Length: 353
Image (tube, rainbow, N blue to C red; front, top):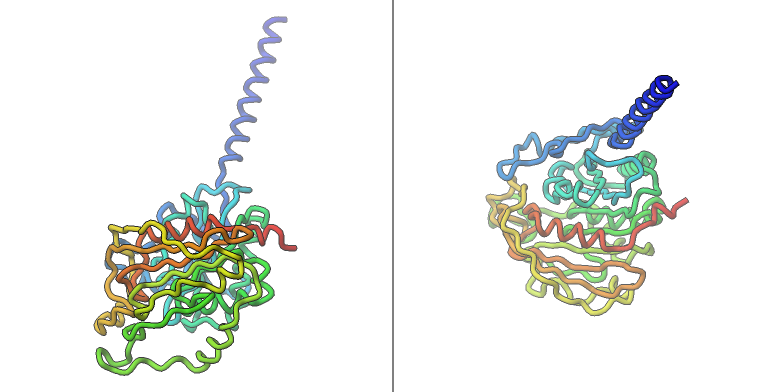
C-alpha cells in the first residue's frame, strides 16, 4: 500500500515538474513580430566611426506585405507577449535613407532599457510625399495588430528635416491624428514659432561660395500649408543644432505651449556628451558650411522645458550647441529626448476604436 502510494506520489511529482517546466518555457518565450528576426546588436548598426555607404543606404530587412516595400523594425529581443511598449515611427530627411536616420537618431541603442518599438521606413524617391502614406499606415497597422493596441503606452512620430515636415503633414490626417501622442521634430520645423536660419544652413550646389540649391518645386506651398497649427492634441519636442539658427536662436515663447497653458520656459541642466554621434553628411563636407553640418564630435546640449502643461503634455526645445543640421545625435542627448518622450501623456492608440 505504501509502495503504491509512494509510486503514485512520485508520478504526480514528475508530472508537476514537467508541467511547470513547460509553463515556464512558454512564459519565457520572447515575442517576435511576424517576418522579423531580433539581434542583440541592432541590424546594420554603424560602428563608432567610418560607417560605410553600403550600410547607410540599406533599405531594411522587414517587408511591408501590402506594398512590398521594406523597412527597419527594432525592438527588445526579450520582449514578452503582453508587455507594454512605446511605439515610434521615425522618418528620414529629404535625400536620405532609413538606415542613416536610425544611426542619426540612434534610439535603437535604448530600445531595451526603455522598452521601445521603432519602425524606420524608406521613401524610394528619398523624399516623402502623400504617395507614401499608405505604406506608412500599413506599417503602423502591422505593429498595432501584432503587439495589440492595449500594449502600446504611447505612439510618437519622429522626423528629421523633411521627415519632420512630413510628420507635421500626416499628423493632420484622419489616420494619424487619432493615434499620435507626440511628435519629436529633429530640425524639422517648430510648432509655435520657427527660429530663423543661419547664413550657412543651406548646402550649395557647386562647393564653397556657390549659390544655395533652389528649394524643390512646390516646397513653398507645402510650407505655407503647414503654418497653421494642427487641430490634433499631442506633445511636441523641438530639437535643433545651434549653428542652424540665426543669432536670435529659438524663440523663448511657444504658441503650442500656450495651447496647453504651460508655464514660461525654463532652462534645465545642460547635457554633456563625451562621445560623438555615428553619422554626418559626407557628400557636402568639403563645403564647410557649419549650419549644414561638419564632422560628428562630442558636445553639449541645452534643454528648455515649458512646465506645468495641462493634460500632462510635454512641450520642450533642445538645442545642441555648436552643431549643424546633419551631425548625428550623441548618446546622452538622444537618451534625454527619449526620457522627455516617455514623460508625456500617452494612450491614444489604446483608446482608439
